[in-house]
Image (cartoon, rainbow, N blue to C red; front, top):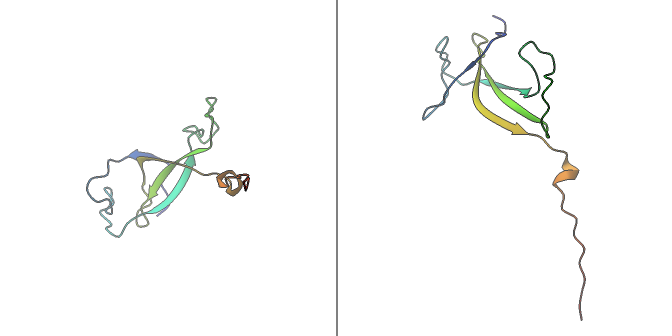
Length: 90
């Protein structure tokens, strides 16, 4: 079965491992969709200040896709490095 085009909202409970559509119970694959992506796959005219992605859960059995409301931002390694100057006083 192919991946569903529709992304359904889902609310995680104490544990989220079972597909609500087909009851497959061994977890999900994940994918990332830009929050700037429109529902038709084209870029939305509304821009955000950073690259933020929706974490999409995909059932490996039936291909249903779910959005649990999780968001993630990826940044370059260089942006995570803090450069500091040391001055040794004697």
